[in-house]
Length: 162
Image (tube, rainbow, N blue to C red):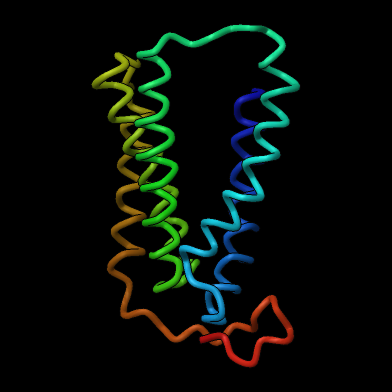
């Protein structure tokens, strides 16, 4: 149950955060690379403080192979690659389409890779969930052309949303 609560909180944080990000990107005053730099710069000190408070005191050093997997998978692929692709997509598309596509494909891919490489169980619930995710992505990705976003910006001083 704790995992579900934290997953829901993560989804809430990311959902709200990306609406703010999209409203800023829509002004064209800041591009996706700057948005990533700001996000990372703000998040890093917070994460290091949490690490120092909860992990550093344990004096546990990871094995080199474990650390390399973390650097490659979480740092380069998910962190840099995922953020770069997501922010570029967000700068070109509607948050109401980009966010659900990106953040629903991630768990579908994770389920499949977890089964293949981590030997996690695969049952009808996971199969059904992945099938529904893929169907939802297809619906969002093939929706009739992107409509011009005329929603007001979260920044009241912004002259335009484009």
